[in-house]
Image (tube, rainbow, N blue to C red):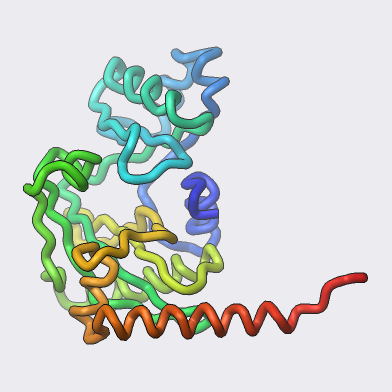
Length: 231
């Protein structure tokens, strides 16, 4: 369910997790009545905002819009990649925080890390092509903030009934409030990726992390084997 950001966000809201204001629209509605969609976005989300394909990753097809014309272009671009278009309110002076989660029924959260993008936002080029973004591990958070994002990361993991591993991404707004952005259920897993680096900073080596993931997979497999099926 986390591959579809609209379903993911609905589950987050049902679980009472704090998120940014958002709306979504079908591509067919956008193509049928663009002015109506633009007015709806302006009334419910406002500017500045981000537009995303609902079922894509790596920041492909994402744009920031600060005006109606920019919003029109952003929705048109996102529609090239998906039939569902997601619009999210931009968070002023936001810090981007990530937390790794590991476990099945009793998940644990790593120390949080912070990404400082080398671009206006953490887009595809900033992630994969430019070496200008800064990773800060552990993130320099205030009193109680580390525990808050760890608690919310576990809650997000459980809200979508995740198992094994996931990375939960946050914004922290200008008032210090953490907002759940999304959960990545197949996070990058190279030695330089944030997921294993956060666990390494939390005291779990790459080799130990692999051992734990294998153990969790075997545990999950054994549990599924207990399920009776009809004949």
